Length: 120
Image (cartoon, rainbow, N blue to C red):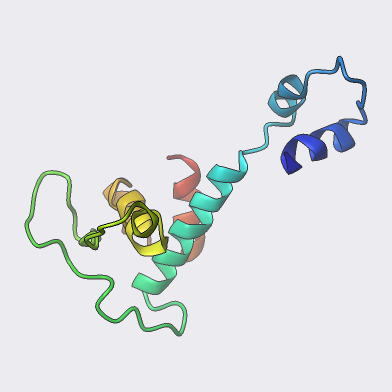
């Protein structure tokens, strides 16, 4: 709702017959969901690579078994009994991070990680 209202403001089109979808396509803004996901993944990268002073403790464990879908930068997804817990930061972000290509998770700097993340 906020993004749609912002699109009307930026394009200066407030008439009820104006298509907000068309405005959003022309502006080429990523959705708020996409922006939040990239912010979560960036924070996970920083925590995993010790770029921030935060001890993840036993949250970032290597996978308990190797498969075709894991790489050196994959983590074990914490077990969750409730859907609320399943959608919290660590389980949701680790799940998304494990689905990233190995070249993205192996980025050497935060800037290169962000650039590679844009291509995914």
